[in-house]
Image (cartoon, rainbow, N blue to C red; front, side):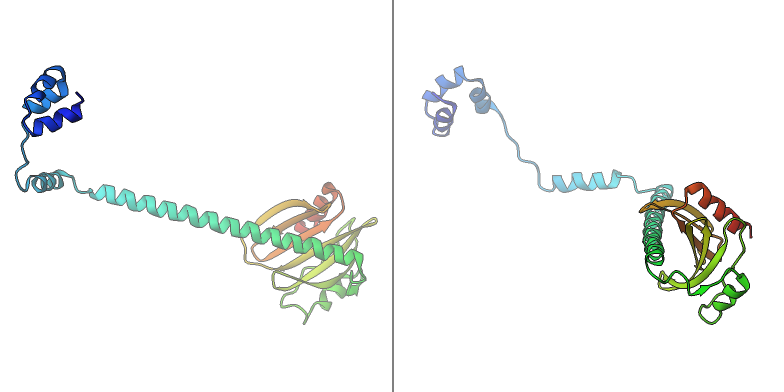
Amino acid sequence: MTCETGRRLMETNDPAFAAHALSCASCLIATHARYYEAPPGLEQRIRGRLDLERPAPSAWFRLAAAACLLLTASVVWNVVQFRSRVNREQLIAADVVSAHIRSLAGTHLLDVPSSDRHTVKPWFAGKLDFSPEVNDLEGFPLLGGRLEYFDGHPAAALVYGRQSHIINLFTWPSSAASSESWQTRNGYHLQQWSDGRMTFWAISDLNQSELAQFVSACRRR
């Protein structure tokens, strides 16, 4: 006899169930077990007691939670700003390379061809809303200048030479904090730096050491 058959016999008080129960421990327990229903409202009273014994968050806990939230928000904000700045710098770098290549491949290397800085600097007057610094740099003769556009505004392009190499120095006003970075794109070396008032980009196919000399000469002025 199976337990299922035995349970049906138990429900009908069939005497045959007694023989089965003697050989089946689970059915024997089921026969003699006592079941009690929980009194009304017991569950609600237990839940209420648990709610009373649950400690309320302390002031220090709330303060720590708020501090963690603020720290997380600050980290996320700084990461977003950093990525935005990096992406923007990479976009400008791509434009710098494009402008340099165009100037070498076309006929628009110079708007004002002159080695005299007193000729080149005044030429930008009225064409820009700032006056670029134009310097004579030993070992890097000034060839002239032209207008360019970067980041949505006009910029000065100062052109210098080094033997058979061309160096484009782009500059425009910027309130960005002082910074400096090197990179290489399409076989050209680029250096960017900012002094909090102006931003500069130097680019050339010169080796990095000579371009670094040029940048050092510019920054000493």
